[in-house]
Length: 329
Image (cartoon, rainbow, N blue to C red; front, side):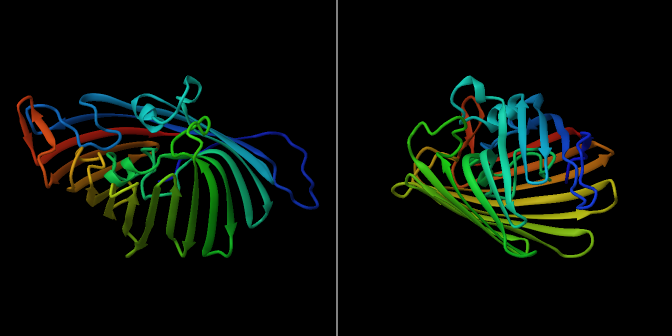
């Protein structure tokens, strides 16, 4: 689901003979808030990013400023609130704690674009913005993969259906600078709307497939599969399907079914051993203009008792409910 944009166009001279487009200054963003409850004595949340606070809770305010010229431009994307803080949890130093993205780009040719700065990750099906995700809560694969990268990347448009990206980045989620002196390499191959992604560096390698297919005018299924390894045997693998049915111009319903498995106490589900989790998330999405309402029911079922459902009791399953209100502009 895309943002509705407010275009503010500067009065810049234009070569009428060549028809050079005028630069534009764009402003867009969103705010979100939600209510969350679990069906247990203590209000436990799945160990995923965002939508994990209890009762009436805040998401984030997101403001994005963009300048788009003929050959170059920039994005300045700032976030406020709990979801925004979690999105930039790897930042070091107070100056970057509100920055979700900050990058500039230059188009060498119509088919080659160079981007430098901090930008959201190219891996995975889900993103930080609640407007761009169908489900409001997020998957384990998204939560424990990278959120953002700081570095330089080159995008190559090989044809209308084939693309390639290569880049060199700081350590994952280190926004301001490369504090650990390690660098990462990333690449993405796009083929007819399907994407193969690679991120590797400092004993970490993740291979990811993201794609989807339209199975009719109103039915779409998204797919994400990923595998990440650290030094030794630590790591995780997962696969998720995202079937979505649009029933009218204002309502759609979607399901996320995710299987997630960690090895050698990776820490996403448990701190030792091998643990699996299967989750089903059913989300409705009602939209009226720029307003979106998302009621959501989620069930998590794990191979071990990882959910602390009361001060003295743990369980291997958890059911929870969220209703989120989102406004985009």
